[in-house]
Image 1 (tube, rainbow, N blue to C red):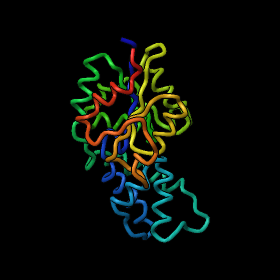
Image 2 (cartoon, one colour; image 1 turned 135 degrees about the vertical axis):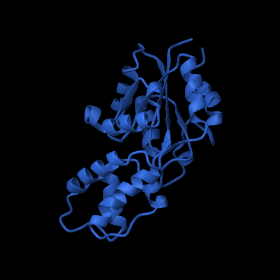
Image 3 (cartoon, rainbow, N blue to C red; image 1 turned 90 degrees about the horizontal axis):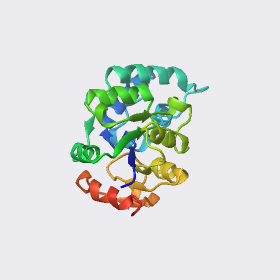
Length: 224
């Protein structure tokens, strides 16, 4: 069997982080006397990093302030979020048995996300998931964000195989575009964060639950 790796997105793919992302966003918005945003809004706004989430939060609650500079709010968001990173976040059902099976079969696992690398590592540690992943790549790791394929490729490279078969797993258009740019198949999950159903972006396969994940991934690896 060829060497194989699976690279996962994080928010909305491995972990339902929306409750904690909502609290951090609302903390920032409250300082500007804006209304809180809802979980449904957060699930649409997430996907392009914290700055985009904050900017979308302001836009949805009265528009961007005059001469808007996202950086002060971004730093406050990161500070608050890092202190409350795993108060409401939960692993999606069926994921851990899938990761256990993949790891037992020698398939190496990584994370490629638009969440900061340090926050990603912190979250995985809080959920006792660090041992599953041999690489964690965020937008600050290389200074490049998805859907550029270079973060994905770096996540693969750090797993230590020479030219392995690779599959991407994600919940959004960004993940589909990343996989396409990297020239690898992509498995879509429908329980994440996206303004349109992830199936509308034409992943190579879809699952409804991680109980279906193993068979779907095996079907995406190149047949020998």
